[in-house]
Image (cartoon, rainbow, N blue to C red; front, side, top):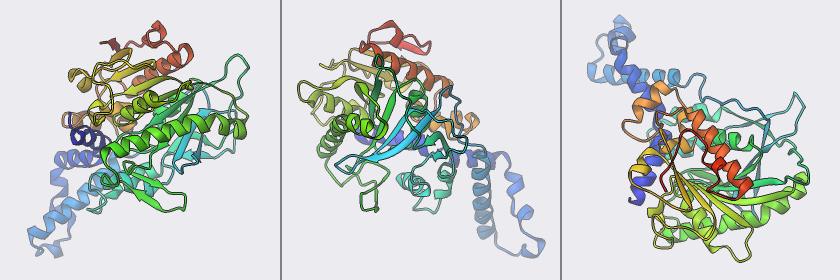
Length: 401
């Protein structure tokens, strides 16, 4: 598959939900938005060429606002999770999710989007919403809670069970916030998740060390340069974070693995393959790996890696027979957007019809998908064996390689 096809699906699956919701509501209640129902009789002289577009805009905005009431949907978890943003020495930001030890009822909850509206505007810019003045369609995410305690102390573990660390790479046009609920679920299982926000121009928006915003720019680097930068940032995180977490939280990190979604998968694979020997990278976890974006620098589809690797693929990637690593698990009923939080951003009533056009959310329960992926990842981190029964035990999983 081409780079634009993979990246276009990923971006639109995550970002077009509220607009589609508004159009559904408009179609269902068209009569209510007729000019006569909106404008005073004294304005009947307004030409329909003006009145109808104005009514449509009003209906669209109203529908969008209604569709995201009480959204996004935050899954429940059994363990408190903390969140913290730090920087690598190279300047890239990393958002941490980890088991938290906090009994203070007045603790502050971290926002879903680290930079609030700046993050959602960057995401909106990816699909042209910002250029059209429609950034409000994603505005509800700027006000949402992550469900994580801001800068909470990390749970200390006993000497027999150090905390495993998963360093994760976002997709093309993604950022460190788009899978916040997924990473929160993962962290609740007992791991630290470090979501790297890349500086290669493929993040929807990031903030540089000087405080300036850096938005998506696909021409900032060539594809090969992007992938090299991304892999180097993952390796830098693997070297830096264990020491930094020891300094900040007095936490001891055990097993370290790399992971990634879509374009983040080639980034993780390249980093693991290029790690020096001996390496502290013990495994790779990838979701819907966009192997066609390897620019000739990665093993082919179906190949195995010298680092233990497990791949999870959605319905559409399974149909395309995408396979990589020691095992590939088809997550039945999952679409590309299920590996981030897209299905939780708006009601299923909206997400499922939208998914007839783009792979935003599959028929499987999105909370169950995240739960089983998290349990499987934790089993892999503990055993370092991608073929262990506990890694493949989810009832949504079908082993296809």
